[in-house]
Image (cartoon, rainbow, N blue to C red; front, side):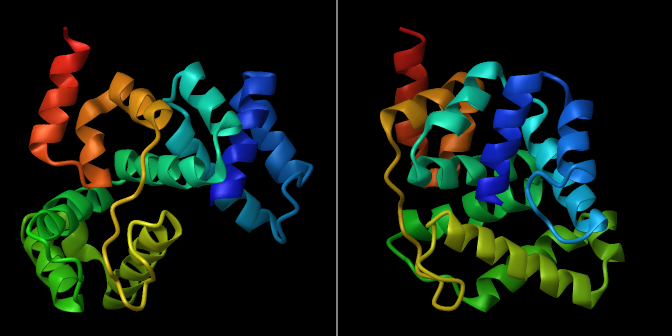
Length: 195
């Protein structure tokens, strides 16, 4: 929901009130979505990702390039949904740093099985929901260009502009790991901030 994220960030910057933004999106259908339930669901989902951002981060969303916005949306998803963050860092980044650039279904299955063993929430979801979660995760990874496609699943390290790196570093430097930065890279960036 890259376009919708940019629009909602802009509406919030303009009105500084989530109630007004919700009215624009849900009641006035400013994003031109089909049903009221779709509008409510998408608004709720995007608001969850945007509500804790600083004004500078929201301004970045509405002024950055399309490529930066896709990557920033990945960052928002990773911040909002721990499962996405952990999959990227624990599976994709580890494979990438070992020069293994292909994700297999078995990689995802092992990851989910390990998380399910320690999560009551994951243990309660149905097989159908698990399948849908997997589809959504790989669609997010594809749209953010972290993989070439949801079908072939080749890992690609994205180009991160200095501005995007700076915005993320100001908030949570650890999230640079989702862009396949090594621990050494992250440590060096932390040290350069503290100098």
